[in-house]
Image 1 (cartoon, rainbow, N blue to C red):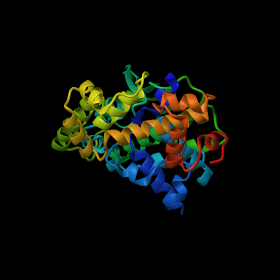
Image 2 (cartoon, one colour; image 1 turned 120 degrees about the vertical axis):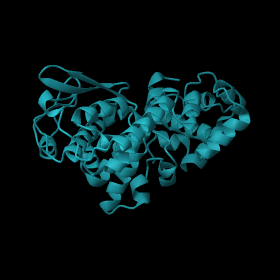
Image 3 (cartoon, rainbow, N blue to C red; image 1 turned 135 degrees about the horizontal axis):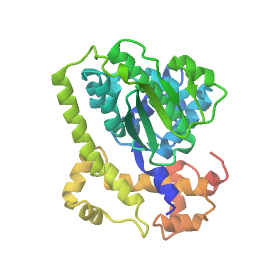
Length: 341
């Protein structure tokens, strides 16, 4: 399997942001059926626990959302409506932190709980405190959404905990200057530099001791402990459903069966079934999901023949694959490849 497909289809983005996109579109007057048309996503799927989305899934939703709203600065809108509670334990850790320095260090450490596609790095000199982001995967067509949403989210959180607009900030974004660049300045309240080598926020060290008006030592300790637990789980492969999906995606020589997956994850077959059920899914559902995503990716992004796609996905009989494909997508593989969606 091509590395690009593995990276594009790997679960890595918390579903909260897809839910917020859908909520924003509903406020604009669109219903769920219209919003999700052509995205191959289901509202029930987005609400099912905390099963992370892949870059490809988010990209499909964003293309649909942009087409409906005709607002290419959608990330700015979503970042602006994201409440503290939407960030879960991380949000509670932020609002209960003692000062802005701790807020920024906490954000840097735990942003990965929401977006696993970037790594946040902080640095400090006598004069400046800098927050930078490194891409862990090629973000492609979702780069502007992710960076603009994270930018406004960071600024909004700072405003919330300090109860003032700290805008003595230098902002650099690794995206080409868009025609709607003035929207960035309006939303951020300060100049934004485009075409930068990386995402960077730089502010004076003097603002770091600004106290958080909602500081609460007990809440902060509890929320921080929860974040650390989540981060340990993430470093161990994430939720079990995510580990199983990654195991299936990374298999280059046929898909491992239920027993083999259980063995790789150091648990019994019964335990794997039980724990996946708790997460609202099953091995077969995850296998079907991986096959669906790969089938569509191969058809839309490559020239691999349908017969070869069927073989790569574990179907010995192309006609059987075509019947299953029609059940998944309501069309034949050739119709999807020809753009009859």
